[in-house]
Figure 1 (cartoon, rainbow, N blue to C red):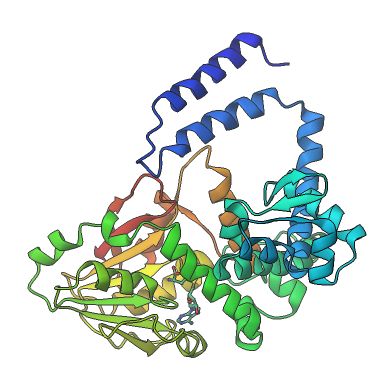
Figure 2 (cartoon, rainbow, N blue to C red):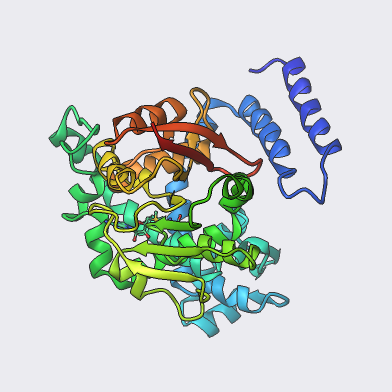
Length: 394
Ligand SMILES: C[S@@+](CC[C@H](N)C(=O)[O-])C[C@H]1O[C@@H](n2cnc3c(N)ncnc32)[C@H](O)[C@@H]1O
């Protein structure tokens, strides 16, 4: 058992964080959560800790079931109303014996509020989950990982010692599904839409825009080059469009590059006239030469080092000495990384043999590019999981 004095110290840390909480600062909750996490860990007996961990899978299956049954969506569409289980059964067609079990779980994991006996109402988590990108993203992450989870032992045994450093071992996803994630996305339009929508909502809500981390105006004032920004693998172009919206008077060309199925799927009205979408495969020559900024967000974490060097070499060959490469990605801590970043790293590993990288790993990767690149600076902002890694020709 943890000593009482230690628990008191941890409780005092929570109180300190609460005392300095600032309602106007959207990142102010982080310190409180971190302090609470430490107290939770120190108080939980190991057997309870292990049992809870085991049940995370059951909780996620239940979330997917509740979405599939349309229960959470119904609550989110009627946020000021509470629903009895019998009403939910009447409206969705599912049996009340199942609904009351699923909804009890939704209440227990805070996806809804339980306001009375077998009676539920939407809370902020319900409404946020039911935004299209989050709904698709939640279903997709679970659908893509459940099957590979079932096969993980077989995958490890058949590929022992599992050299995942590049090209030798298939990803766990490929082993379980018989095709790569990218091949699945070319065939399964529902999953592809879930993926694209989840990228867009993340960029619109959780991500701090790259130009609020990287001093883009200062950089532009130092160069005489034509201001061209190329977003490589930019998906639906949210990052470029946000830039265009925030700098309406800046004279620049904004080029969005992605695969044909992604460009084709951009919903009408997403992009304004300043953003030019073009089809481009980043494993081929980059045709836009000498752009001021080449931007890659959450692209390289999808790929192992061999493929990443290939993507970066195609970019570096198009760069001029004043060009900057901006990589907006997680920079892992050398030790004690947060659970969220470990989750992302392992998801990338399972889905596509991708990886998150430490600063040293980023430097080593850039040095392997032909022509070589060097890291200039890492630009971060409190509350954003990703940093802008600034690089130039070495
Ligand atoms: C994880 S998403 C990141 C999207 C976007 N940069 C963002 O942060 O929201 C990776 C993107 O790479 C694109 N992609 C995958 N393979 C590609 C290729 N060979 N050439 C160009 N884009 C590719 C996908 O379509 C997808 O939009």
